Amino acid sequence: MENSRPCQSCRKRTLVTDYETGNKVCSSCGVVQEFDNFQAHIGGITGETGTYIHIGKSGAGSVNSYKENKIYEAEKVIEDLVFKLGLSVAKSKEVKSLIEKITGAEYGQGKWFPVFVGACAYVVMRRDQRILPIVQVAESVSCDAYELGRMISRVVDFVDLKLPEFDIVYAFESAIKRCPSFGKVSDDLIKRMLQQGVFLLQCLIKWFVTTGRQPMPVVAAVLIFVAELNEVHVKIDDVANELHVTVSTCRRRYKELTERLVSAARVLPWGKDVTVKNILKNAPSVIQYMEMKSMEKSQSQSLELFQYDMEGLVGDCLRKDGYDSLTREEDCSTSYLNQRIDYPDKFQISHESLSVIYSDFLDEISLVKANAEISTKNKRRRKNFDIRLLCTDWWKGKSELSKKLVLKQILEKDVGLDAAPPSFEKGCLANGKRREKIKSAKLRIQRIMDPTNAENASLSGLENSRKKRKKVQVDIDWEDLIIETLLLHNVKEEEIENGHYNALMALHVFDSMNS
Image (tube, rainbow, N blue to C red; front, side, top):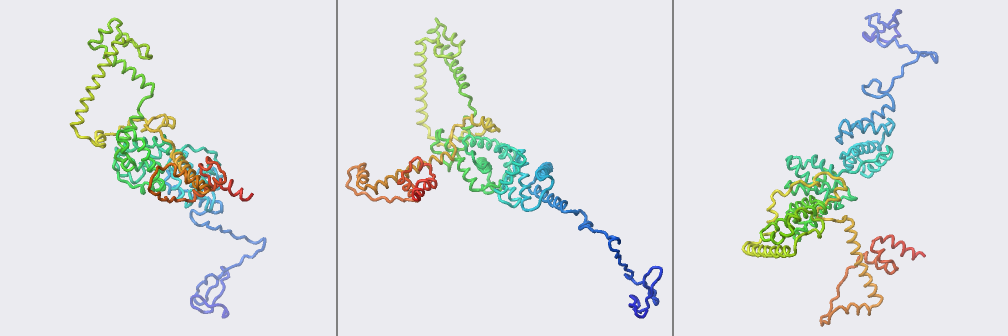
C-alpha cells in the first residue's frame, strides 16, 4: 500500500482495490480514484473490433464520400453563378438539367467547370431568345470571352442544338428597359423611343450595316441616337458599359448610322446642307420622309389610283360649260366615265376638246406662276430649318417598319435609300486608292528607266509658260515600294488591286529569288 501512488484528494498512499468494482479507493478519505480502471482489449484476429469513425460524420450538412463532396461543391458553383447572372428559378433548373444531361449527373471540379456552367447558362437563355451578353458571362466566370465561346460551341455540338438567330429588335427592346441610364424616362417617351429605334434598326438591316457585325454595338448606337433625338441626356460610355460592349465599336456604328441618314437626306430640298455634324437637327425631317416613303403602296396600286384620279379629273373638265357642246354628239364624257383607262386607245375625246383643255391648263399654270413670283418677291427668304419647324409632331409611328418584321419584308420596303454594305464601300475605296498608287508607281518606274521620255511626257500637257516649275515632293510609303516591286516582277494590276501583298510577295518575289 505504501508503494502505491498518492490519493488524488488527500495525497496519502493509502489506496486499496475494491473487489466488486475494481476501482482504486483511498482508505483514509474514501475517494474513488478516476481513470484508474482501463482495460486493454487485445484479442488478435478473434478479438473485439472497434468502430470506424467517418470523416465529417458528426458535422451537419456534410458529405461522406468523394463523389458526394464533388456534387456538393459543383451545386454551390451553379447556384452562385446563376445568382450573379440574375436568372429566374425556372431558368436555373433548366441550366442544372442541361449540366446533368451533358455530364451524366457526375458534374466536375476544376477551373473548367465554372466556364462550362456559364456556357450552359448562355445556351439556355439564347435558346429562348433571351438576352445574356457573352461578355457579362465571361466576367462572371473570370475567363476570356473567346474561351467561353469555344465552350459554348462544344456544348451546342454535344447536345446537337441549333440556336436561333439573334433577334436584334428584341435586344433593343430589352436594352432600353433594363439600362439604368433610361430608368427615369417616362413610359410614353420610352414607347416613342422604342418605335423610333425599331424603325432605325430595321433601316440599318436594309442598309446591311448589321451584316457580319456584332449586334449589341449597333443597338447601343441606335439607343444613343434616339436618346439625343428626344433630348434624353445619356453618355455613350455609360450605355456601352451597361450593355457590356466596347465604346470604340459603338462610336463607329453611331458614325455609320449618321452617314446613312445624311445620304438619305440628299433628296430633300436642303439635303446638300445636311452633314454628320448637323444631322440631329435635320433628323426629324429625314426620318419623317423615310417613314412616309416606307408607307407608299406598290407601283401597281399607285397606277390604279392614278388612273382613278385621272378619270375624275378629265370628267370634271368635260362637265364644264363649253366642253360638253364640243363632244355632245359622241357623248364622250358619259362613255369615258363608264370605262376604265387601261389603254390609250380607249380615250373617246375629240381633238378639239383636248386642244381646248390643254390651252386652258397652260393659262392657269402661267397665272399661278406669276402670282407665286410676286408673293416670293414681297416676302423674306426662309431659312432651311424653317421648313422643319412647320412639322411640330414629326413622328407618327404608322409605318410597318416601326414593328418587328422578317428580313424579306424589310428588304421589300423603300425608305428612300438603297445602300451597299459598309465593308463593300470601304473595299471599293481601298481598291481605288491602290489603283492610283499603281499609276503613280508605273510613272516612277518609267521615269527611272527612261528619263527623257518621262520628261517629255510630263511637259507635253503644260502650256507654254515662262515660269519655272517647282519640284513637288511626293511621300512614298511602304505600300508604294511593295507595289513597285510587284510591278517589276510582272504581277498583274488586277491582283495588286486586291491588296493581298503578303501572298503576292511570297508567290512572285521570294519564290523567284529562291529559284
